[in-house]
Length: 134
Image (cartoon, rainbow, N blue to C red):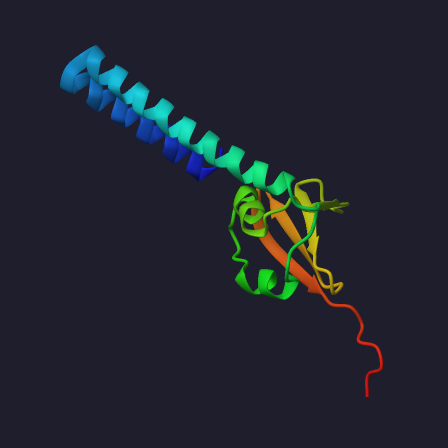
């Protein structure tokens, strides 16, 4: 179990116990309604991200160089999708635990992002060979 999941459930259990101790069932119901509100806010944010991404070509970014410069390890997949404004082009991965998505721009530069358990582990940028190099 990931530490974030464990921390979430531990916090929810602690808050539930505090709500029960403070005002019994009304406190537990208030906590439950706050948790439902939090879930609905996250669901709404995810729907906005996916709706915006559905309007763009798959795997396209305006500038792969700027995308590469702004990436940070540990970002969840939904945040990368929100940042690019499009869904990534899925690539084959040698590792079963790893998901690989690629975004490219009109100039031919591409960024391949490797996600482990839904979080950005590392990425690699490839640029097209320059023609007429002196």
